[in-house]
Image 1: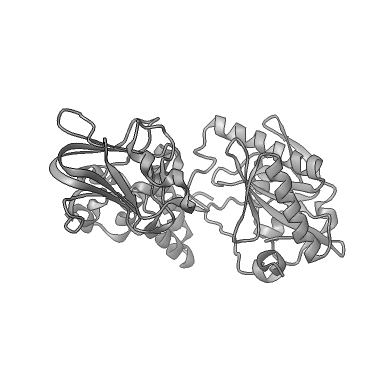
Image 2 (image 1 turned 30 degrees about the vertical axis):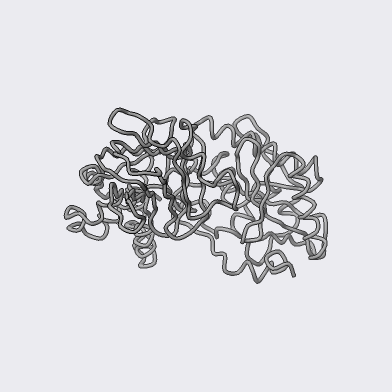
Length: 418
């Protein structure tokens, strides 16, 4: 059900623009962060607020004549992702923008880079090219400062300076949360939505969600089930078609290549059962496979074999903290792969709650055509929908969130290797 309430957000973008906020992206948009200045300094620091990841493509520093001031410069970083040499920052200050990620920090508090020009120079312009994909939002809290001694710093640009402006401080809590959201800081809005929902004010919570997405959709982002993300509602037709194609191929690889029964599950299954396509407000692809094994040790070992098989097929695979595999295809389509098994004619499926469904609700699998691609479903998907979402599963609910609390207890050997 869509709320009939509406929340005015027309004031948001003018307020941000008036207070210097720049929504800067990558090379493809040609919309970098641009700082015009007249500053004599040796060091330039780029830093993010809070717990964050700093990902950038390129930093350019020029004098008034447009001359590159980075020749011979050095760079220091707070961290480099997995200590990889290619993320040590050197590529960030050499050459032209590529559209890729030429620096990637660890997930840390206030990640930073410091550029050493080796001597005091007069800077006229600093240009920062963000990464080209949807994760550009990570850099929105950028603060750029200058120094001559690494002790005393002068702020050249604070992208979140609007938070200290009189315009912002006179707003009420909801209005401030909408401004934050448009600047890619969604924490306060998420808290408000949760507060209204917990108080039984679901219409207000939905209205806030809709207002947030009206601000985010123009940059192909949304407030989705996993935070700031790219839901299928904002993905292009080309992106969605690739997802259908890669999903079909992934299911085929698991069945024909490895020999396990695999099918779409959770939100992905819900979309196919309701409308034969992905849910507009969903943002991932959920798959469950039914193990050919029966004991915990055998099931875990089989999952290791599946990982090795997928890697050999060209997929990237990593274990998550909720006992499923993160799998990425060569076309950069990502899947969440969950484990299930048959026990006493019942089908156990991490992370779904008890009571389980009958094995006959899952097997034999069926195939449906969606957008020209065969998609594999369980035998009786409605039974899984009731188990996962309750009796009202047919009613759309963009605010619905899965309760993970029971899963580590029910499927402990998958979570803890027991």
